Image (cartoon, rainbow, N blue to C red; front, top):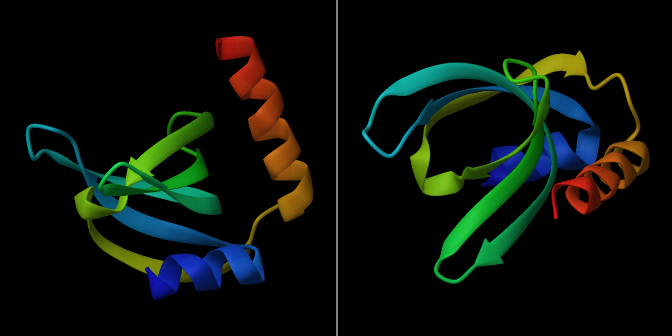
Length: 91
């Protein structure tokens, strides 16, 4: 989680290996925007380049990750605002 916090703080992209419920892992480039707790699980809200949309990732399913030198193309405040607007459309 320290690497995720660093990505959020520094506005940098991450490369993660993310396992689905069946344990199948996929490589993703994400732009983390915040971490939150949902019941006993910790979640990362992030823009997912593979899905071209915001997604929530359970940290217990991130099986590997690295901080990239590449910065996100948007400021954190803009990404959070876009996430909130998207969340309103989904409801």
